Image (cartoon, rainbow, N blue to C red; front, top):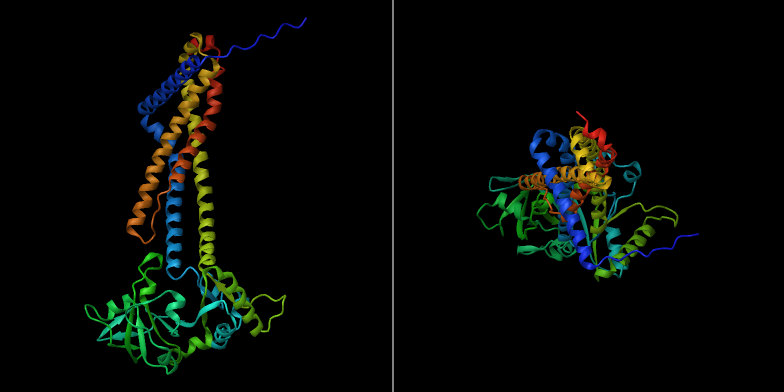
Length: 437
């Protein structure tokens, strides 16, 4: 005969609250016991947590620097126009020039005729700025002073609008000055300070590779960022006179074509129209790859994030190894604690402690030990990150999610690696444990 099923008595809210208080009291006792053990064995606890400290601090440092790096990159590129679409010969590669793929080296040069075709036929494009750049340290002098690291550009009168790089003092050269290859120049703030310290640069003469130019404008200051303030080290002159001073640039590099769509939402349309015009001019068939590259701030930002993502993955692997080593250390120290406290475990079990109570005690101790290491890792990682940000151009970003993840992972490591010692302690026979010496 089947015995009758006795319905389970529901606990009242007061009983549930009392049970919660008892459970919290037990957790507090276990945490207090864990901190007492850490204080009594400071050196051993530090060595046990060293792997966790290294792992968590590595993650915090990596996230702080990479997030700061990415934020700075985004800000730098957006300063030059969030809708910029630039057609160029080479892809954005961050290695040395000799590592440029052969397929890119065989591409045709972009020409002024290509830029004119985009200007005429791409109705979605408002500004078209063909540009040539000389990066190899041109000799720029004035009044016996020399500016170092100057990047000289040969541009058209549309350059400021197409690149969101406007004049702060004076003016930009006109379309007529460009057409007649006038020997006028617009210089960056850094160039002005190097050549004319404590003086007004407007109307003064500068020498570029021995040729005299008159300064008609000074660009507004772009600021430093991760580019080291390179925009402030630029000097631009009309395209025609640039080709006379630096003829090798036209023969070897061609030019880049910077464009701005008429509306921000037309960026994709401008890319499609510009691409089709260049493909038609270069005689490409429908199944041929583009023989040019397209650069936009979004694409450049994605490229940087891919690079930093690879670095992040490598650092996470290193941090993971450190955390596993730290977890093994926590497990070993907890096994030693089980051995040293065998009589205590036997006494507790003889007084009515359940196996679940013993398991929870040692698990909480392991988690507390690991969390202490994780907290130390967070402090060390943030300290190093902000120290690097203070002494270098790489900024550091505070990431609450990374801190929470670091602490959460350290607690999880303590829980996982503390499970075996906890089960081993819970399975001890109370009689044998009381007689343990």
